[in-house]
Amino acid sequence: MHLCYVDDSGEPRSGVTYTALLVRDREWSPLLERWIGARRSISSRFGISKNAELHASPLMGGRNIRGSALGDEKQRITKHQAPTIYRDMVSAVPGPGVHLITVGVKGSDSMTAYALLLEELEKWATQEDSYLLMMYDGKELGRGDSVESEDAILRDHSPLRALHRELPIKSRRIIEDVVTKDSRYSQFIQAVDLLAYGAFYHDVWQNPDRWPRKVRDAQSADQRIRMTRYFAQTLDKFDTVPNFVWVD
Image (cartoon, rainbow, N blue to C red; front, side, top):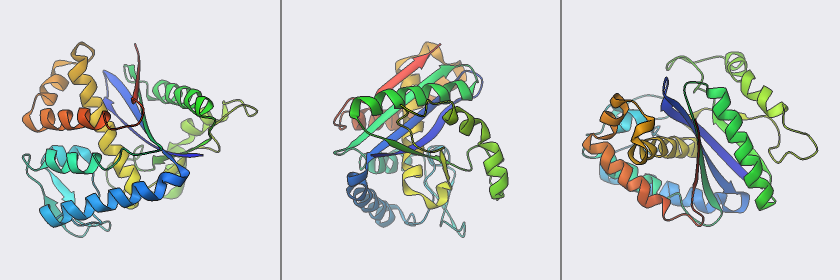
């Protein structure tokens, strides 16, 4: 069995991407050890609390990082420091039994992109003769940083649950509906957030014609160029080449 952590990225009007971080159940603890080790390192070097939520967009934009899981203090990271922090964290992810899959679709239809992700995950799990339990940031479909009720989160995720329930029961490899997680309290939801951001900008770098000028300009900023290179180096460390499937 594999645990599957999912996050989205992209540019709202031009393309939607979903990235899945797949971890074999018996490799979950070794991955957590590597990740926590990297958290300790950036805490020592940059003063980032081990409980701080790592979120790629504010990190790479040089904005405040929430200083603790409870949102007490904020830590400002410079644009020069951000790519190094990104590198140190994502380089902790590759290892035995850890895989990465990204899908993307042209336009703004996130449900089409999510359906494509389910299709690719079903294919992958069938080839691996494994089963998947999917987890997704429960706040991603929310509204800003406000605290939402559990009912509101469940309502927001009803389109995703509907797609899961269209999978054929007898042959499906993705078990249960998608599980919502709060990224503030999930290290691996934070990990896949960093990876999804990197996968998106890596595609902008490799396939610039897919994306509008403002996205290409954002990718060409020094800190994102460095981040994209670090992401590309990380891809080479996975046991199998990470998939990227795009549909126009």
